[in-house]
Image (cartoon, rainbow, N blue to C red):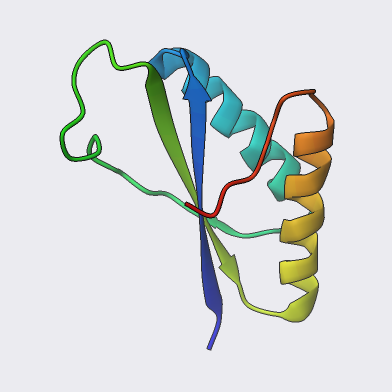
Amino acid sequence: MPGIAITEIVAQYADAARTDEICRRLCRELGERGVPLLPLEAAPPPGAKSGAAAATGTITAVLASSSVTAAFVKGVFTWLAAREGRTISNG
């Protein structure tokens, strides 16, 4: 059975448009590596207020094999390395 990786992007002080742009860039990186992605329509987190200091985007990937899992990990780390200040949190 394939695994599912749900990756949440949190961009401090970014508006929804900027967060969407960040997610699209990571999706392109993963897509170029052959990682299948699922569309995900997500509601704002519970308790979120308008004008909040962080905007969140979510990417869902299907990790059907070890090679796809490796491509996912490499894609995320390549994306992180492309810009100083990007981090991973398993919050």
